[in-house]
Amino acid sequence: MSMQFNDLFNRLLAEHSVSSSNPAIDQSNMGVINLLADTFQDLGFVCELVDVPGQHKKANLIATLGTGSGGLVLSGHTDTVPFDEELWNTNPLAMTEKDNRFYGLGATDMKGFFAVVHEAVQDFLEADLQQPLIILATADEESSMEGARTLALQGRPKARAAVIGEPTSLRPIHMHKGIMMEGIRVQGQSGHSSNPALGRNALEAMHDVMSALLRFRQQLQMEYQNPHFIIDVPTLNLGVIHGGDNPNRICGHCELEFDIRLLPGMASDAIREKIDAIIAPIASKHQVDIKLTRLMPGVEAFDNKDSELARLAEVLTGHSSESVAFGTEGPFLQQLGMDTIILGPGSIDQAHQPNEFMAMEQVKPCVDILQSLIKQYCL
Image (cartoon, rainbow, N blue to C red; front, side):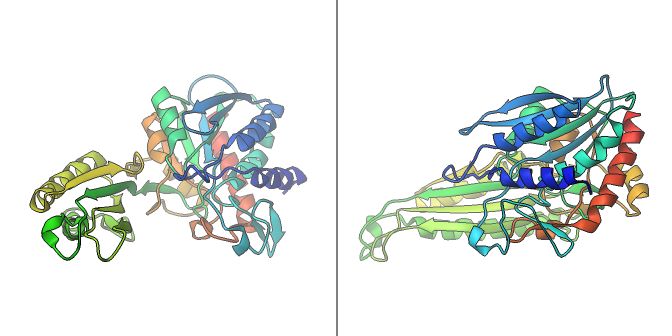
């Protein structure tokens, strides 16, 4: 790879861009967005920043080379998950080249993809593009996906096809599960524990709620199966619970947070309606208030099994298209009318943990694949 590749890779990782549902650690992505805008503008791309609503200043970038309809979008997100610097063996905010790997926060998930794209587009800067080549950089994929939601609402960018460069070990992905994250709050009445009649125990009500959710999980797994996934059923994980403040007080409030991974064909709004119906009689039984709330807007499952782009990627990579359990911005780009797949360098197994890395051996093959796709969709 060129010196430009290493330099851009390092500069991207150096820019802080953590996104989190916790406002105390959530950060702007503008450092990454401005760096990418300057970089691709210098190559001749027309760059537009699209503001994303939220507490901190954030934006998407649409960088376009060429004009007209159709063409190809190469897309990635600019944010990272939070990190514990003391657990890293290298500087997480710099690219470290070691053991035939590129280490750093976002190396594979997924700032490093933009350095790969930068390398891939070099051969086309003076080409007579018949259809546009678009580089898309989004905000907040790791938290709310508000960046991609904003673009979907605005109806842009438009192209014939889109590749999202999430780490897939260069295997084309045409299907993934959706996700919804929910909270349930039980508000009871505290009182002296020596007399249960003095209060309404929120923990006891939550016990019934949890039991009902586990029965609901079993029901969902009997109703929905998809053999294309390794875990071929929807999952429901009870992830967080808080309640009460002292052993000798009747618990007055309790909160539960959980997620559900949805298979294609499952609608999150319909699932919420079913959960509301499940908890209503529990609230009545215990004479407490129970409220279901969204922790995030949710992402629907992604299914593009009839994809022309996926079939082309199968030929280029030598791998059949697959499904994965993790979520991406795929549904939002598909909503824009683009034939969308997930395909990128690095492994998801290295993401969201200390010492994240991208294997060097995947960079040149990824550049070759992207260049073949650019020729197919833009020349």
